[in-house]
Length: 93
Image (cartoon, rainbow, N blue to C red; front, top):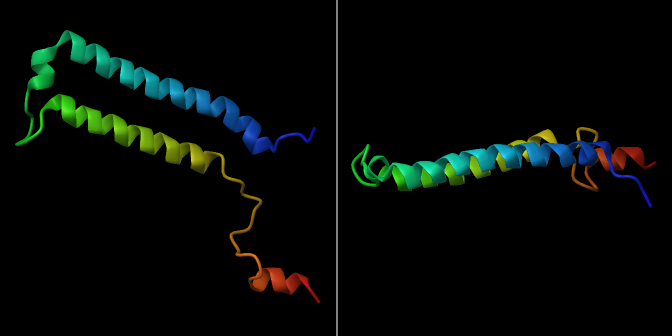
């Protein structure tokens, strides 16, 4: 069986750390919603209450963590050149 690329092996532990970070944020959101309903019902700005705003914050945090994971696990050895481009044709003689 072929071995995994080193970035994939490192990404295995990293994804669990990032998931743990998101889980802690979600747990704090859930506990705060269950314990302090008047706080979550407050309207800090004109429009949505704090529960809705923090829910959108959790969605944004999930997207940010996914992008961070993608950026940290990228393969720097792969050139950013399309196949058949100038760099690929330079190798053929």
